[in-house]
Length: 110
Image 1 (cartoon, one colour):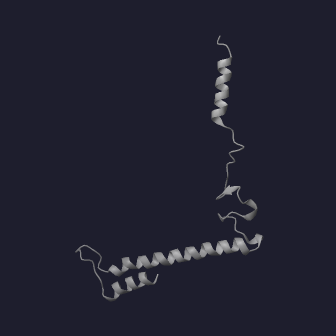
Image 2 (cartoon, rainbow, N blue to C red):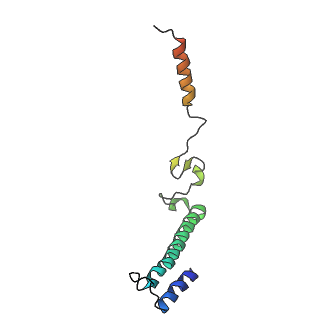
Image 3 (cartoon, rainbow, N blue to C red):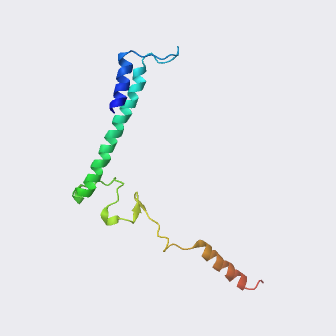
């Protein structure tokens, strides 16, 4: 964050302009977006950290319904709110089609 701020501040202090005739007259404006992006990323990181702290250490009645974090009591059953497919309980489609094919071959053609 510090280096992006210094980068934009230096451009402002020297009144940096684009070398192109149709370029920006104030280059510090575009360079300050780099600093703004870093600030947004830091705020987002703090928000995620606070959500995780609430899940791990907070009381259950304060949990928010829109969190994508898996609750300890639901661990392993869902992925980001979607139920996990249990392949051991799922039907094998190829196996079922093979049984149907055998059944149709075993019946005499009329």
